[in-house]
Amino acid sequence: METKVMPVNEESLAYAAELLQNGQLVALPTETVYGIAADARNGEAVKKIFEAKGRPQDNPLIVHICGMEMLKGIVSEVPERAKKLAKAYWPGPLTMVLPRGPEVSEVTCAGLDTVGVRMPSHPVVQAVIRRSGVAFAAPSANLSGKPSPTSAADTFADMDGRLPLILDGGECTYGVESTVVSLTGEQPVLLRPGYVTKEQLEAALGEPVLVSHAILEKLADGEVARSPGMKYKHYAPKAEITILEGSFDAFCKYVADHAGEGVWGLCFDGEADRLPVPCIEYGSENKPAEQAHKLFSALRDLDRHGAVTVYARCPRRDGVSMAVYNRLIRAAAFRVVQI
Ligand code: TXA
Ligand code: MG
Image (spheres, rainbow, N blue to C red):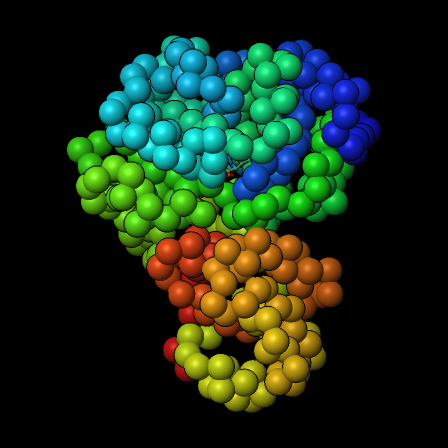
């Protein structure tokens, strides 16, 4: 299959709408990462997403909408908590897990009786949904297990030959996937951290939000993940990454002791000059939003340079940093060394 990469204009938007209406796939930018869209009601269309990504069938997809009226049929109930969060953070980088409605295909939800729903703020997503009338299921546009793409070029690198159209809408603003919060139980549960933080959710809801422990730690063998996506190895470049937790001085010393062929550093802005190995910088130490924006493209850069062993500076674990830490620790297959 030929994969067209088109700038966003009348012609490409019309083509995207036609593809979605005909049960085909479209890759497109959102404010978080690039996604692969298919009609959430059409099981055959959604199956093509799983094939294109090589994604395990038991990992459910998020349904994207462009107005509150579109929730009808997609969810069976809009709880008060969902109304509060929608008011505060929709459109935006927040996904809510709610009771599933009758119109969503079983394939989209991997057979669960819940559905993740998100109203993105990106104008291209809104235009495509409005034109097509299609609420679409969309996971990140990477091959399963790879870092999520934050540009059309990174999307093309993974999806060339696997789908007909990539809409090129430039770089994504946030660079990490949406915050996922479950509202189907007794208490709200944070399933995946993102740009909307736990503290912000608690402020909007007026109650505490539990943090699924799978966010910051590895699941024990045999433990069941509340969010199926948490159990897979994720965001992993080819290089073997180890996170070094400690001061920058200790980091410099450790890397100097372990320098050698194929060894790279993944560090904060302005630090590369002090290190004896080549480095990719992923944002300022005190600017977690910048780190979120740069992390995935930094991981892809390390692969392009042929890095074999990578030592990474450790992000904090609170606020937006929780999202950065959550992605990096998976890319590092949970290897963290205290230095
Ligand atoms: O920012 C985003 O959310 C991007 C863009 C494209 O919108 N999409 C995205 O989708 O990251 P994906 O498929 O890569 O991640 C969806 C996550 C997975 O961890 C999945 O397990 C979880 O959301 N999820 C989806 N539906 C769920 C459900 N019903 N219950 C629990 N977890 C769910
Ligand atoms: Mg993903």
